[in-house]
Length: 143
Image (cartoon, rainbow, N blue to C red):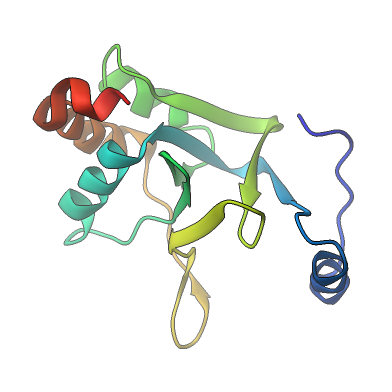
């Protein structure tokens, strides 16, 4: 975990980020769970899910971070089998959010134009698609 986290109002956080190139915006995983998977697998799972729901997703280099309902990430890992699914959950877990260096939203957690928050899916439902994506991409999906 990257040291103590201070909650800041949005305007102050934006000001600090603009004054410190390379700074990170870190969110504890208290209100959601984060599933960190190989990017290829995460993108394939998102394509499978796009008819059902929009799943918030952060891209960080070769990794995709899918956000699911709090407390359900472990079920995603269980359903996807013995594959590399890192679950970040609870107040001890965290994710770097855009505009942190090296991160970008593939799917932001809000719907345009009203900026209404997206409803998070249950980890079990995402885990089924992750398992299918791992099967489809074999060893290439493990990178």
